[in-house]
Length: 472
Image (tube, rainbow, N blue to C red; front, side, top):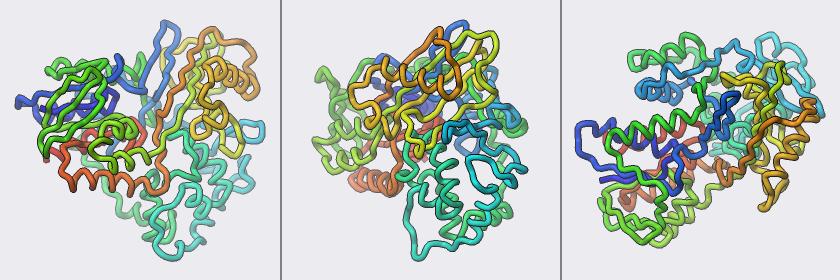
C-alpha cells in the first residue's frame, strides 16, 4: 500500500505514474487531500462569456519536461481540447514591460537586437559583445543569484529590465535572491565550463541532439512541427487535474477529501503510520509527499526535527490575483501576452496578463493582475482585504492601460504561501534533504514545486522521476 499526500497537480500526477508502473499489480493506493478541492493552485472559473484563471493559464511545450506533459495529455484523451498559441501569435510575440510610466515592447525579432529599444539605452547586440568580452569569474563559483549572473554577463540594463521582470513572472520572486544554478543551470554551467554564455551556446549548437521522436505521442510531434509557443486547454486549465482525478478514481485509487494528516510516524524502512485530524491511523508501505515543504515539516518534526528544519528553510511567497472582465464589443487592450513590472519600478503589482488574447472563447476584455509576491508583506501586510487588492489592481489598470470603466465582473484571490523561492543554494538544500531521507532509509518521496521547479511541466516531471526512482 502507498499513500499520496496532496491532491494538487503533483499528487494527481504521482497517482497517474504509479498506476502506469503498476498497471497489472494489486497496489492499493490512497490519495489524501486536506481540502475539498483537487488541483491545488490550478483553478478555472468559467462562465458563458469568460474564463478566469486563478492560477496558471498556459503550458510550455518545449524540452523534455514539456514533451512529457504532452504525452500525458494525449494519454488522458485531452488532445482535442488543446488550444495552441503558435510562435507567430501576438500573445507569443508581444510581451511588454512597464518602465518609467510607459509600456515598452520587448524585442521580438532578430532585427530588434541591432536597434535601440527603450528602455534600453543601447542595442541589445552590445549585451552579446559584453558577454564575449567578460572573463569567467576567478575560482570555482558554486552558485550565484540570477541578477548577479546576468549583470556580470550582459550588463545592468538586461538584469533590470529583462531578467528581473521575467523572474517576477516565473516565481513572483527577486532575481537578486533566486539561484541561477537552479533556474538557469545550463547558462551557469556554460559560463563555468566555457567562460561565457555565448561561447557555451555556440558549442552546444554543434553538439545538439535531436529528440527521439519515436518516444513522442502524435500531440507532442504536432507541437514541435507547428512550433507552439505555449498552449492551454479549452474550458480552463483545471480540466487537466479534473481529468487526472477521474482517471485515478476509475482505476480504484481511494481518494479521500477533507482528510488532513497531522503526523507521519516512520515505523521502519517499509512501514509508515499516517495519523489524521481525528486521530485515526492509516498504515502504508510508502508515502509520496506533494504538499508544500513547510506543511511536510509540521508532519515529520516530532521524529525528525533536523529534516523539518531543512524543509522550513525553503521560503514561500504570497501572491494576490485579481481577475477582471470588461464586456466591451471592441478590445480595450493591444494584442499581447501582457506586461510585467520590473522590481526597480517599486510597484505593488508584478504584472498583468491579457487573458482575452491568449485564452480562447473570451467575450470582451479579460485581464489578470498579479500583486505582491516577494514584496507582498511590504505592500499589503498580513491583514490585507480582497477589496484593498481590487482597488490597487483597478488603479493600475486605469493608469497604465487607460481603462476607465469598472469591470462587469471580477474575482480576487489571495494565494497565501503559494510559490517557493529558489534562493541561492536551493539545489544543494534539496540535495541535502533527499540525502537525509536516503541515509535513514525513510519510506517517503518528495515531489512537487517545493523541490523541482514551479512550472506545470516541472511538477508533472517531478512526479514521474520520483515514481521511477522507486520502481526502476
